[in-house]
Length: 91
Image 1: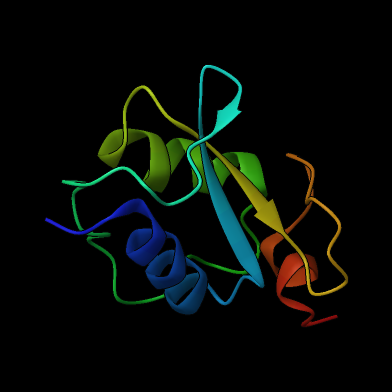
Image 2: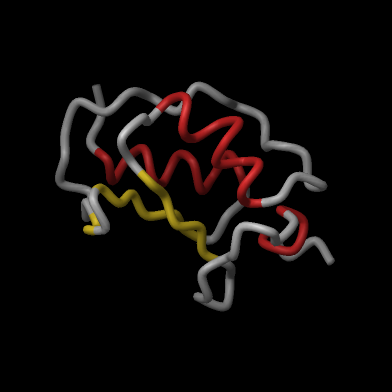
């Protein structure tokens, strides 16, 4: 099983996010945890989903006990009600 760093890069690539970061108990995991499940999706979530929907429908079921922060191309953290199209820069 891969390290968090690899999974973060995979999620960002599949979902077309600039970057994601795993958190546990409010602390950045910083890519050094091993034995993480692979990201099981190979196609990006619908652009009309919000960040909160993506977290609920895709992230939380695969990585229980973790939180994730999604970042936009300008480096800002995407908020929960933001559409994935906006995060991806499709607008």
